[in-house]
Length: 202
Picture 1 (tube, helix red, strand yellow):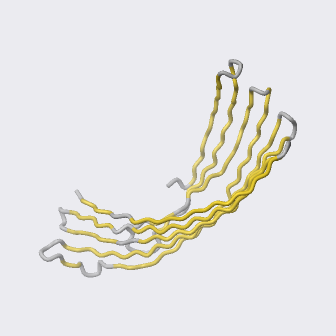
Picture 2 (spheres, one colour):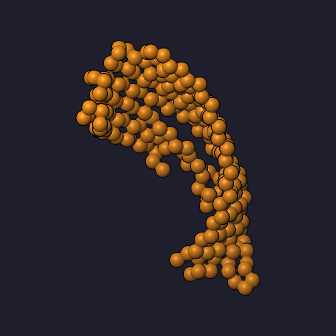
Picture 3 (cartoon, rainbow, N blue to C red):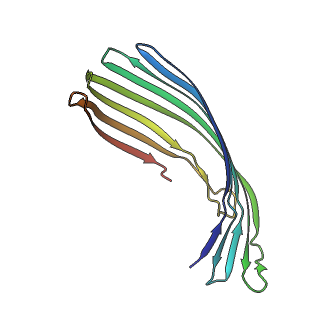
């Protein structure tokens, strides 16, 4: 058995700016995204059986930015294609320090148990989207899409040494479906099928 106590102090900032346009055949959107975060998690873990307590105080600073754009173009009055692309860059830094105590009276710092380090990881991601829409009528639309997703990497905050960072998670998501209006506009009937293929799942 063990008992842990964690206190998280977190601050973040994000801002997104977009521009968009639309006409009879083309609609598009483009933008810039900025994100900054500071997260501190002073933590202690006590193991009664061994009378040991570990204390560590990690601080993680994250900065990310992205540019993106997406456009949908009507090939015909009933068929439209969509393409989009997002580029993301992230930079994460951890400053971590920890010690281990023998819980006697008084508590005794274990020799060689203290540590302090800084570690850095950075990742870039290109995440596209492709889509196709086909309207059989004003009330029936079929669609299909493929999208790549990205989840940023991070750190194992309990690691006593640098090199404990882990990489990002990736996913390709595929979806197809049918959107309909039935009953003379009184109801909607939608059907969808989807699949997601993950790599480096966190």
